[in-house]
Length: 401
Ligand SMILES: Cc1cc2nc3c(=O)[nH]c(=O)nc-3n(C[C@H](O)[C@H](O)[C@H](O)COP(=O)(O)OP(=O)(O)OC[C@H]3O[C@@H](n4cnc5c(N)ncnc54)[C@H](O)[C@@H]3O)c2cc1C
Image (tube, rainbow, N blue to C red):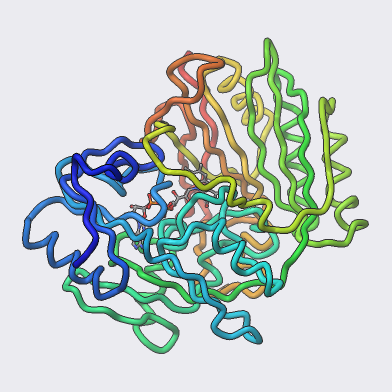
């Protein structure tokens, strides 16, 4: 029997929704094995209701729940196993959270670059991309996937690897949500224990020049350095909260990578040190998803940041209702990273690329972010690069005020 939760059950309030979306499914099925996933899929077909598949429930689209349908929730499929220590090969089931993965691999001196949050599920991130704290050194999470076990729409179970269904493996690594239900991944982990970690706040002026300086430095910085910048209103001004992670425990290299960032503007606060990798995707992040963060998000890639882009970002946030997050790509993000699969890296990655994730809030400053998951008019305007083999780029457009 597949464990099943329906409206009225004690656990239903903790299983009906995702991080961004409150759902009201008819039933949530919690398979504990691949054969139960197959049975759950058969059941969904028999009852003829809409189907949603969920691993961690952190997807910003909210598609891992529904109203009136069936949800297959993979959270009971959460084993993490080192299957070949010498080859650093790890089998991770789709319902594990990245905090659990980091925790399980740490005793082996291994880690997998995932995202920035420990509560994100393996299944959604590893079928979508995975821009993590080590992205400029190691590329995306999908660059390190060597095999996947997939339940296809007809209920058959296949192993996709370099020798079996290689096209399916290619599709899983980026468009996995469209090709089946992935129950487990084999991923090549990295040797990694402690990393450099710095957190600081920089005052940002109306012209956003501090952001431009950040981008200029990241375009040439050591690829051991990855950063995330969250741009926030702070009283009448703006603050960039910068997290910098350096993929080494060598203190001199950490200092060399981070110190130039301290010169991009007026520093309001700072701390730095060495931390074990699991501290970055902490088990303290683990929580139930109950629709706590509804958000409209939009994102795009910037190959460079012009003065106009930086000013548009500052204007976007100065209204007080929006939050912008920038990630530095480039480095390993261009080509699959160290140990990554360069041949399969998608062409849209670009040296010095930046990812913007502006999200408009509707409740006003100080009351938390509320947004929805569809592209917003005001965010990034996607443009096709004339000579760039059809690559999509983005320019920031000024927000509607
Ligand atoms: C707070 C927060 C922080 C984040 N930080 C990062 C970050 O740093 N880097 C980054 O790259 N991303 C980040 N993300 C985005 C996140 O990685 C993706 O949204 C990812 O899809 C979430 O995975 P999940 O399993 O938790 O999601 P879910 O909501 O369970 O699923 C997301 C989508 O994937 C599908 N899916 C889930 N599991 C499977 C499966 N096993 N087989 C096939 N399809 C499946 C679902 O049907 C749904 O369409 C963040 C999101 C949030 C909300």
